[in-house]
Length: 346
Image (cartoon, rainbow, N blue to C red; front, side, top):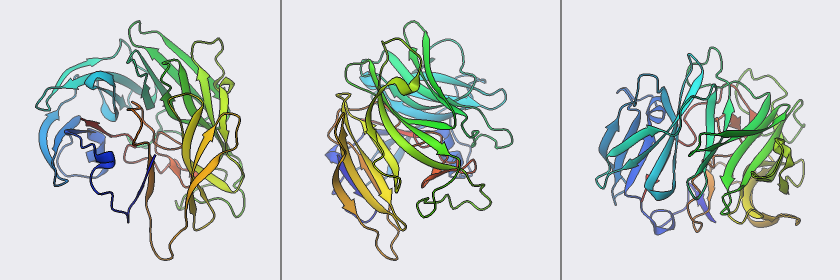
């Protein structure tokens, strides 16, 4: 693992591994309110001075493709894109590669058909044969940035070769996130969190959104490991690798590792928040590896990445893949810049 803070010098690109190209979906530029029309995908060359040189501006592969909202790296130099349009509410999944010069090529649907919802949290298996994702309904009246608050959670696994889909779900006001495959290509890890009816006094970080109604406190986060080749369709049936240790913490990241039994994460506690980094293993209490106290009068941005792992081919973006989580709350006004709108080619 490697910790990233806004006031720390990393001494170069993360882990010393510089990408050749950066791919950004068009909704990133739209969310940043750039004046120029945003391409479906933008490809830029990474320069050693930290700046980017435009290489390719990719148009939608069809008039019905919708807006590209999420992109992840896949094995073998491939990339997977999820695009959505709101009228009708549907998403499509595409795969592409890059030429040696960074031009997009071979853009094609992963499979026939569409997903009648907004797609997020993409995760491709290490062998490239399966794609997992979650869904959310498109929200009325919010344009292309919003998605409705959840009334349940589900994860779908698409077998790319056959086009078959299998879905696991759980009812209630629940979030599923941090979807990632183990190296065995069958164990799927994810975080389930509940949206509680009442915020806990003195604990809730708060969304900071004016006019937000109460009862949107995210809690009870737990990391599950699901055998996707076993029978059943219950999303809570996966082995529990980690549960939030106490009610006074807000879990912001928790990721299953490649072995399908251990992992790492980040929590916050108190106001202003102390940041706690931890590791976990099945059947054992979590172990704190580092604590960062807040600095008076200084705004800090702290992130967590697994720089020494092989590529995870996943959108590991916190407790909600649709960008609605702020601190310990969920807000239907929070969806904005896509959380996995950028991928890297090495």
